[in-house]
Image (spheres, rainbow over the protein chains, first blue to last red):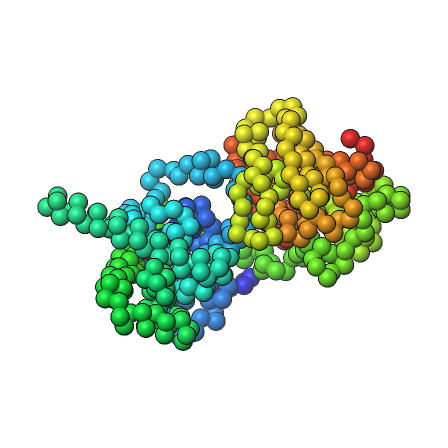
Length: 172
Length: 282
């Protein structure tokens, strides 16, 4: 990687620029906080840059390729996190700086309000497109637990979205 | 198959992720249960909506200010360093894993007159042995202090909640008595106190009921003490083999940062060589 021409770096970042916001949100959604999202994105970008010359399928393949690298990076962080025991809830000590939470969509708002163990299953399923077995491996939990968490999460989301829909209709 | 069980399986069924036998069971149930058919349609619609709207939310994302500059800096810094994996990784669980080389027991060490050793100053096999012992002792002590909830690891089922260190780290001060203990498989681990200063974090603890280090299952407990996301460097482990008292010294933890105990081997213990001292008298 040393000695790579500056033109390569420029081209890499030109391709990355339109994807940055999407990648950042993807990481934020999967990992649930800004600090981890930035770490994951940074590591994914370094990996992608190192492998840039091996990108197959031309530049059109870049968005999907780097998204997959990012999701792999996020799932690695989640695997490590599955083996972490926080002493206290980290968010109690690292309050989210104002303005750093991405603005909300209705579904995203409902998803992010889910308890962490439900939220991660939903995001890995519907945003990272992982199979239930891959989610089980990533979170280091049994497949049956993934299924029951997804089932409960969907029930909660349905209820939250029905409520939000009713409120919206009432406001019209 | 009951309706509730079928409903738990519906997302996997809809995605074709069930094996043939399970899929047939769900299909058989659906064939005669109109309520579950309705539920399946509702789940399908809900899943489509979640996937579609989450994707739209992601696609509408814009990068926070300064992100590109941050990423460029990271890429340039990484360019100046060897790729990950080039450095030597220390696997502290080696020697503790079932079937691998195991250290002898504490008492035989004492008889051998093992008094002090430096990881950097002994033969390679012995250095690894010291590291393993020290890491095991440190990890056990820290695990005792820091386990506040249990992961879904069968190996750790049964460990009680023993509290946290965070409040102790909010100001430097003298030794803070803790006196928390846990017993498992006949081995009692007691954390007596924690001392936090601007220079180091010291944990005083003791192990009783240890006949052999094999009993400790330290392969399960080996871990890293993290302050926030940064591992604290392990500096020294002092073990009094006759009384089982242990003094573990880590680097200083910054105030108001959560301490986290990460299970698993220690691939990235920072800092320089650290010291193991057997025969220490607390």
